[in-house]
Length: 101
Image (tube, rainbow, N blue to C red):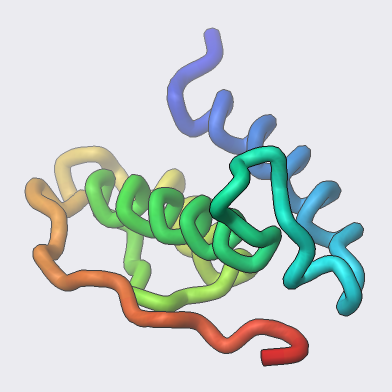
């Protein structure tokens, strides 16, 4: 039976594939969301992934990159549920350093 982390892993694998294909020249290009660049959309997505991880007790800090977020989800999935944090951190997200910025 698939649980939420199994579903997340499938989505994470696809995200890694897509994220890994972004080239240096594509970061400032517009997206289908008129007001967002590729960089802004990726930053937004990573922020929500980090927040989701913190909700389930993953050791993720504001501004962590994709590799760190994914590793924290994987580590969290190996911790018994009773040991996971019960509430998310209230910290906000800070800007990331991106290629070309």
